[in-house]
Length: 143
Image 1 (cartoon, one colour):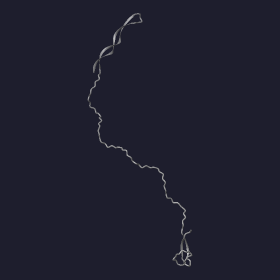
Image 2: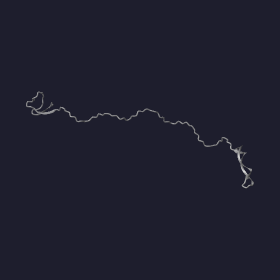
Image 3: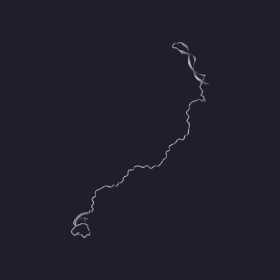
Image 4: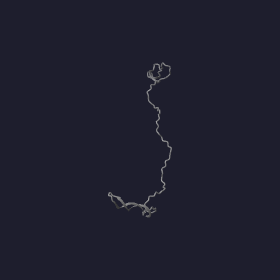
């Protein structure tokens, strides 16, 4: 604390004599104290700001930078062809069974009796190696 001098207003009393007209015809005197503000010099104590450094032990959190090698995943752009489904119209040829009318020449079998002379009445030379009276066949085409 430092002491310094300042002027401040301090209330005090002073003695004043006043003459008052009373309702009587007489004049009277009366004494009283009237409050008055006077300037006086006084010493007051005023706190003065002062900066000082003081060391105290307190727990403190300190951020420490530490370098550690850590495995890291790195994303790399890679081109990759991925099969996708695409709707396509295709024409499919399938074998189907159908009934079709076809005309084909067919061999017709005739049975003929061997004539009494062993040759026939036609001019194709042939032998039958058959005995007399047995039947044999010829394949003829119908024209």
